[in-house]
Image 1 (spheres, one colour):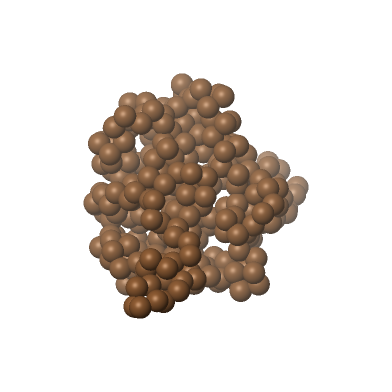
Image 2 (cartoon, rainbow, N blue to C red):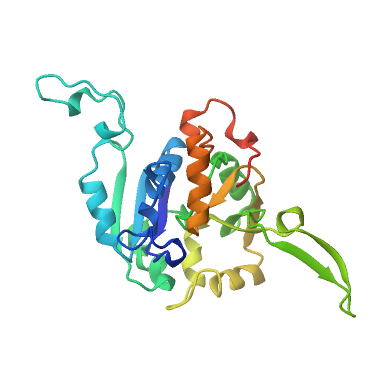
Length: 267
């Protein structure tokens, strides 16, 4: 399946990391978030990508135009010809479509509809989170239910406290938000082509189209309680960098042999 990655956000809460580069190029453990996500999908055989560009999209183009896998992989230099001696290439069989979708985030998916021609269903991602979820399980769940849209729901990772109060304002319960039944949108999606019938010009994907899908019972939620982490703030980046420094990059499933659906760590 083709993979649509929304890469146009400004990432204001990640400043100063996003002053010169777009959010998807912010590094996690020394590697751009976007590249990590693409390797995730590639690991499961999905190597046809559509990048929806916006804020500093030219930096993403430059990154791939100048990308040299020898800088991050093992290779043999022989007679000055290093590229043919690269032991393993990650992106040689990838197809990447770079689509300028403007600064208005509400138009991104509609803007790349022409590149999804002939696709009965496709994958999509906010490009601001990482997981070790076993993707084929989610796809199987979606196919079996025969609906138009699916998203993963995860427990919130923020450290806020949930407060329940009575009608007369007495606190009845207080606990960490991730200890409640509250779940949030994890930003990993699967759609059938019919999703475009529910999107009107200028609409945000969640605020209007998703509400229409809900009314028609065409949107389902795949619960995942394994590793998932967002990259929304500089503090999020620090936590992920710390995990990477401890060789706990759970999102790099291509480096792990165990069943990725068994991961339980949360950030």
